[in-house]
Image (cartoon, rainbow, N blue to C red; front, side, top):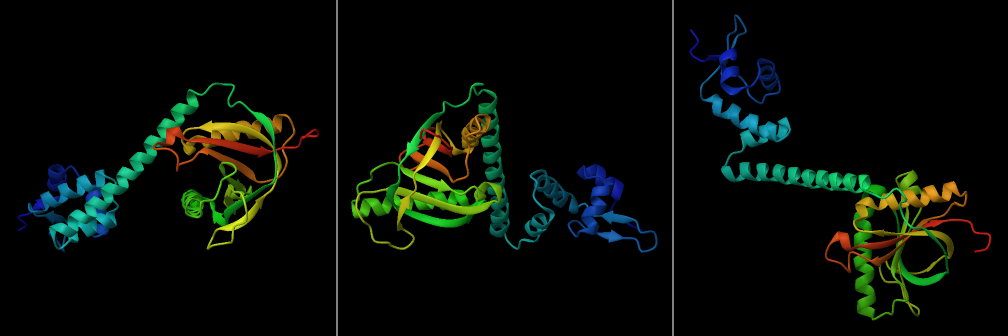
Length: 272
């Protein structure tokens, strides 16, 4: 005679459905204390109720089954807490990303219908120091931040005189194919010998449609959208790298809302 709880009783006590309990048994997360070999009926012990309650809370936090198993199998409290803390940190990152997406959507909905103010500009060839690399789009933000910091440190250490704001050139392949060449540069006075990733470069001149983006780079796609729409509407767009000038870069501000970036879209101008 079985003295444990039937699957129905255990289901009612733990608020886990019979279907879920069957699944947890199949994947080895919560096996019954006993299974009748003749009938196949499953029985759970009362000692398994607290374990089931822990599972419910971890799954409510979207912890994967494999991670829940690792938590339950932890040999000591410290290991268990490390696993839970790591998952909570991942949740906080996702929450921050979701919050950023919400704020970005609100900004889009509140945006004036006329969009960005756009002007035309002739940019002359510039002598500069820069870091150039072919990168994957998913790695671009981290690479860009590192390149900015490295160039800033180099110019400061060598006491070079910047002749203009830091900037970037980005091949269209970075967007279209999610991989392409990126160049971050600082226009400087005088010749500079290459050191590590930093090399002397000549930034080509171009005719550009330019708009200023203020604030987080999370929404810079809106400014690019305004420029691309303008170029297409007036049939003046040409092939060429997209260009940015960092009037107030992450090195100059304490918050992303203080960033100021000029975005340049290559165009054709007969009188340029």
